[in-house]
Each structure stands twice: as structure tokens, then as C-alpha cells.
Length: 267
Image (cartoon, rainbow, N blue to C red):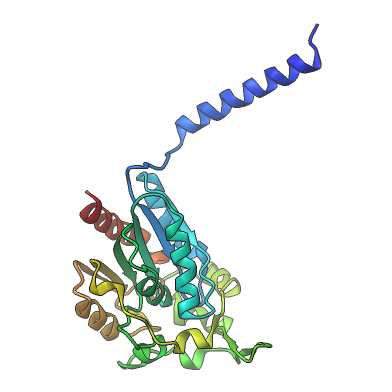
């Protein structure tokens, strides 16, 4: 007679067997490989990395697509630094847009961080701000596309891109339906985060790689080229016609550069 105890035991055993079999059919992260920590920027969120994350996971890389707070440069950098500190093994830090300023400040001398990858991203020097760098060269058109700021109780302001202008400004090479979703789910950035000066930059001590699109309307190509050259980029990839969200429209190219950085610094 099948008792309740034996039924539970049998069910648990079957579940374990199914999980074991399913685990062999999917790619598992290779613990010998560094963890790739992806940091999104303003007006984006973690899912903007989905294509890149899928590429990396398929190659056995552990991936953490963080939820960047977008509240203030030091605050955001400290948050990412806490994640890095509690991540086992070597780490590759990857930042998009404002996220580049964050990874520049998030290393905190942690020896686990082996490389920095800048994806259409700011790489500020000490004292520089994101808003100043974006306006240093002509070609940026973000300002007129911003919606009226949302006033916060603490006196700060949250900035959004107008949804009907989001596609052309931010994601011109992404299918219209996807760009509309990105516009609806965009994360606001605090105005203070864009005007806060950077600390001592990690790119002066760590190797860096850069990738960006030639049709970026948020950070002009000339500014991105300048920052890559100043940082002594090991390799700079310009994707012709790519928008500011080059990681969304060209995930294979971005993932390939991250893998190159990981292989160059952790083997």
C-alpha cells in the first residue's frame, strides 16, 4: 500500500531526477570564467542587456545585469562596488552610457576587477561630469527631447526622454515596437547624477575596451573617440550606423568585445 510518506519520497525523488536531467540540457556558467557585471545607464534598465547577457551565458560566463539606482554618481558606484565585493572570483565591469561613469568609480581598488568595457559610455577623468562631457563636442541632441523634469520631495529632479521622441533619439536602429517598449519602461536619472564630478578614474590603472555607434545622438562620436583614446583603450570598435543602445541593436559585437577583454585579462 502506498503511504503518504512513500508518496512524498517518490515525488521528491522524481523532481530531483527531472532537475538533474534539465540541468544537463542547458548551458551552465563556467566558474573558471570571470563574472561579467553589466551596468545600464540613464533612460535604460537591466533588460537592455538581454541580448548581450544571452550571448555571454551561452559561452559559459556568469552574468549579473545590475539595477543601477541612477540617483548619484558616488551612491551608484558604491552600490555596484558592493555587488562586486560580494561576487566570487574575477570580475569584468561593463558600463553603458552613464553606467560608464559608474564603473569608472566603482572599482574601489578591488583586485577582483580585471577589466573595464565601455559601451557607448562615459569614461570621465577626475572632476568631470557626464553632462559636461556630452556637450564638449557637437552632435548631441538629447536636451530638446527631455520631458519636463519630475520634481522630487528632496529638491532633486528626475529626467525622462519624451516617449514619442525616444526611438529616434535613443534607439533609432531598434525595431519601432521594441523602442516603444523601451520608452515606456525607461528608468529616470536624477539630474544630480549627471552633474556630479567623477572621482579618480579606474581606467588609469585597469585595461579598458570601448565600443560605440557612429550614429549615437546622446554622446557624440567625437566625445566617445576622445575618451577611448585618453583611456588608452586596448581596442575600440565603432559600429557604423548604430544608435546609443548599441548593446541592444548589436549584442553579438558587444558580447564579442567583452569576451575579448575577459580572455585578455583573466588567462
